[in-house]
Image 1 (cartoon, helix red, strand yellow):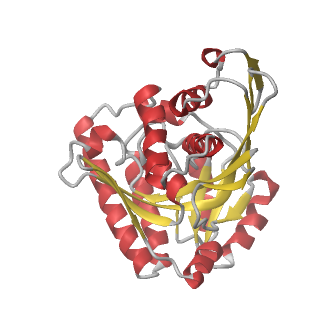
Image 2 (tube, rainbow, N blue to C red):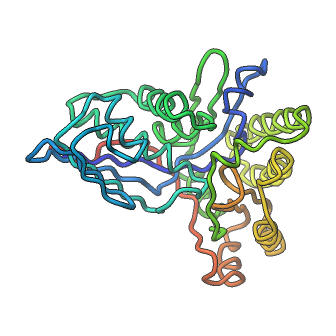
Length: 325
């Protein structure tokens, strides 16, 4: 049996600039600053007695050929790694469901690939895992998404990730034990209670394309600033820039936000937050909130049990095999 563990991610600034249409056409390319989250997707693979394929996720499939698997990511990961029969696959997530804004689809894909390669006795690099995940999601399945999530899930830690004509470059940002503790104390993920399709939000185009490009360039600059703030261990300034990038993001698409999300954002700010932004493509998922170490308690008191929340605790290992026999 093989078990892989792969982290979800939190994107501070730059989301959207990792999409090829933008990063390949801009002289400076795209840039995203993100952190891997110590919340995970687990993939188990075990050999079967017979030649059938059994996959279990939110539903269960038991089929006699690869092409009959309905789960696109599992089917294409099997195809890419050369497995076509005689195994059972299970996926389990700490935060179940898609549309959370935490890059769950890419986390699943990276975790599947890591487990499948290990099942066949291959040890592959983090870069290869991310590249193959992009190949499956973007090239094979045609998802209108960017390339940040695959690399964040594969590499782990806090990273500045650049995108452009020369490919993807991951630049790790050193985070001390003390700074990691401050991230946990000062940053809180608050669930909006809504989920959405990232592909639907990302595929919705602004009527004014020139304005959209202008906003994306602003978001790219925010990523530059975010990387500098983390390197200087200035988390208050990082929190404040969340507001700037959220306001720019709202102008990119008309369906990024809604009244429920806007109300939650305003409640966070009125409770003392330095800054906040919705994670992922928008219109649902988690709100990332920054404030002093007392803010989480205030939010829990003000919001009650209607909005689950937890601290931003960083994963530094990325996708890894935690069990293999």
